[in-house]
Image (cartoon, rainbow, N blue to C red):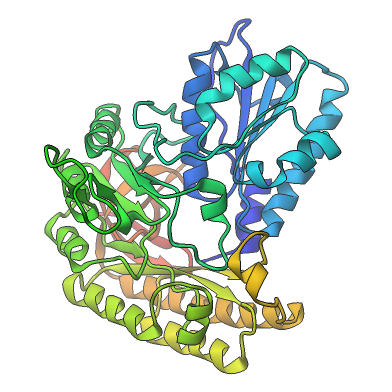
Length: 474
């Protein structure tokens, strides 16, 4: 169960992307921080790969950095404010190290380029999500005394040929980007403006990356996209074939291709869109044991009128139909969601509809937020952000409390059963215990005995909290 506050606290506490580095010699050092969604963390790995070829080595120690890059998130104002505070702190450091270069990557880049470069002078480099290949040239400009910016969006760039440098990972789980951009134009969302139009990556490169990761010891990959269900290779948005001499691949087919890499490679994916998720995807999930029984299916609101204002493309009834399909085809599937409370004009009745939908679905987990108006979005142009902040907070707390009950009940239902767990690492509280997730994405902690990260183990769950299952090896 995650709230906006918890996610940002994790960022502040150091849950950022920074690479592991041993001997660096006299090579220039790169310090990377990432904020926001998994796509940003994946993009940082692409950036590290590009700059490694230019002679940079990554470091965890900001004190020794020659280049600091922040990969940013614009989805909520609080995320932007956190990044701005970091930039101010880094500029204080720059007074004592004038040659230090500071760059802004990702979703804040296009929107705030002029303000951060010229007005506040907080950064030397600004690079949008589709311009990372241009980083070496931009760095060269900065070294020559200039400011440098490239925030051009692309209809073609997928970085399919770049093998990402895996950063700050456990060597067990990794991300693979399958699409970039988004065409959905939800009225509250800034992503289409910061990441551009949707395009799909060559499926063969995705399978190759999955196979490479497995050979390197990884045992789980998450297929990433703003909307994975709209993945289409060699097809237009209308389903027309672009090149008759090449095969077409949809998301269900792609997932099957990746699942066939090796039965010991677990497959997850994020994020699904209710209007695009087909039964074909669910049947493929049911067919392969190594495709995890877990779907993140954002609902945002439980009332059809609010969903229409959000431009989500489905109704409450459509969404619940998708839930029923999941339960029918994959009875044991865990489901998580995103919920926004206090959207423009949300009434007590509309808020109550979200509560009733939560009670009907009983999500295993949820990411819950207050509405945060973002510049350039349809909602900012068309609707008034008129729900009082205190009421937004009260509604959010009601949602959080209800989800806490559902998460605890979900975990209690898993107690007394044996779960196959992929060991991801040590417990945060004790090196005598290991942690890992089951197929439903529930975190389980247990005594390590003779096991190690990367092993599959069978765990009998004996106890739980709302966030964690507790058990022992059987």
